[in-house]
Amino acid sequence: MESLTLPLQQDDVDNLKRHLGMPKLGYQDISAALELDKAVQRWPLLSELSVVAHLNSALECVSHENSSAAVASRRPA
Amino acid sequence: MKQLVLRGVRGGIGATSLLAGLGLALHDQGERVLLVDLSPDNMLRLHFSVDVAHASGWARAQLDAAPWHEAALELLPGLHLLPYGQLRDAEVSQIEGHLCADSNCWAQRCELLAHDYDWVLFDLPQRLPGHRSAVSEANRADVLIDLATPDPGCHVLLQQRPRPDADLLLINRFNPASQLQRDLLMLWRSQPKGNRQPQLIHEDEALPEALAHKLPIGHYAPKSQAASDLRSLALWCLAQRAKC
Image (cartoon, rainbow over all chains, first blue to last red; front, side, top):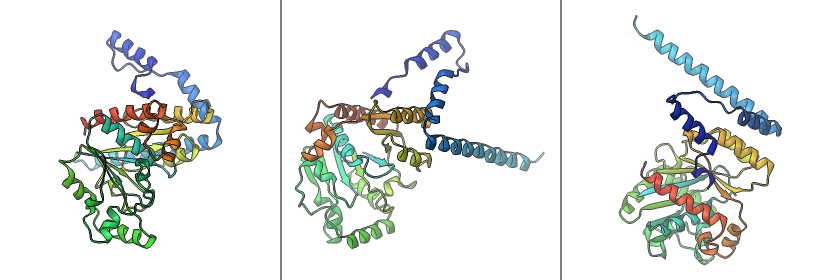
C-alpha cells in the first residue's frame, strides 16, 4: 500500500522545518492545490459537491462561533 | 480480543471478499481469528470451500433454539467461521427484531469469546440496523474501516460522512490508469480524517477468480497484488491494536 510511507515532498518540508527550528512554519503546496482544483473542475458532479462541502463547513464554523460566543456572554462579568 | 468491521459505503464493492482475505492474512500473522457472517446473504462461507447447500449458521440455530456457537466451522487451527445460515425473508425479519430488541447481543457474545480469539471480524449487511449494531455509536467495533471504490457514487455517499467516524478509509479496485479514479483519490487524500491517508487495494482479477474457486485470495493467488495489499492491511491492523 502506497500510503504506508510519507510522501517524499512532505518529508522534505518536515526536514526543513526541523532544520530551521520552526515547527509551526506555515507551508502551502500551491501546485498540489492547483492540481486538486483541476481534478474537481473536470467533473461537474465533483465541483457541485465541493461547493456544497465548502458551504457546509462554513456554516459549521459560523454555528460553532455563535455557540462559543453565547457561552462567553453567559459568563458573569 | 478486538472486533473489526469493514463498513462498505454501498453494496457490491467487495467487502465480503476483502474480509475473508483479511481474516486469512491476520491468521498468517499468527493471530487467532473468528469470522462472523452477520449478513443474511450468507456469502462469507463461500470463500472457504463450504458447500453452497450448507444450511446451518448462528441465525438458523437461534431460530431453532440451538446453541449459536455450535454452528462455527474450523477452517484451519485458529481460523474459525460462523456462517449466518439459510433463512427465509420472514425469518430474517424475526432475527432483525431480536437484534433490535437486544442491541448488546453480539457485544455480549464477544465477551464470551474474548479468551479464544485475538480478532473477531464481522461481515455486515448493507441495511438492517439491528444486524449492524457493531457500527452503532453505542457498540462501535474496536477497529472500524470504511470501504469505498473510487467511483462518483461512493464519493457522494462519503460526503454524507458515515457515523461513527472510521479509523481508516480503504479503497478497493483502484485502477491507476483511470483519470477519474486518480482525481477521486487525490480529492480523498486531500481530506484525510485525523491526518490518516486512505489505503489501497488495487484492481485485481484474482479477487473474483478466488471466489469462483471458493478460496480466499491469499490461498488462491498469494502472489497477486490484491493479496499483497491485504497483507499490508493486516499489518496496519496489528499496529492499530496497540492504539485501541
